Image 1 (cartoon, rainbow, N blue to C red):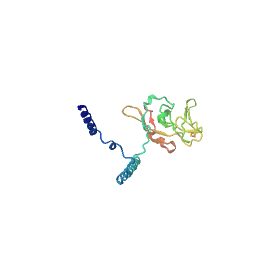
Image 2 (image 1 turned 90 degrees about the horizontal axis):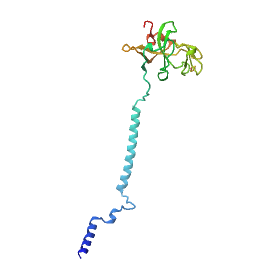
Image 3 (image 1 turned 30 degrees about the vertical axis):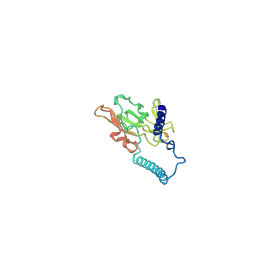
Image 4 (image 1 turned 60 degrees about the vertical axis):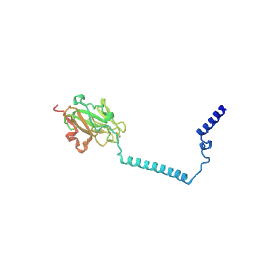
Length: 203
Ligand code: FES
């Protein structure tokens, strides 16, 4: 009897703890109320609105950001004049700076002992020429233009000399400073500008 009572109490206890079975099962098919219908469409609409707004904001930010082109610095130091040989274009800055440093015992106009920085861009159609040391010239492989080590053109279709960059000596450490922001063209008389060469005649 005591056992029965215990069992009966146990069943009651179980009923108390386990909710009605069907209250755990979702209604299927789900009942669509006007409220749930509205809420589902409103949710979708807000999601779409949020996505569109986000995309618009991103597009606006992208528009406001400047188009930055990362290039090597336009001003660089190139060691000291004594690091260079006379009358031999130095190629250590050809690849990444597109520059030949040339220490000339005599410039195209007779000026003695100058150091210049030549732009390695051919003045015909922009190829990069090669230094032919054995022939004492700079030769463009594209259409055959030839330049003296001074930069003066003398053969082929190039219509004008190579261009020169501004050069100076840093007063603190004595190094050559090449400024590619400033260019000088011989045919415009700009090679007479003192910024287009370093005078080594008194060095
Ligand atoms: S690009 Fe150099 S000769 Fe034409």
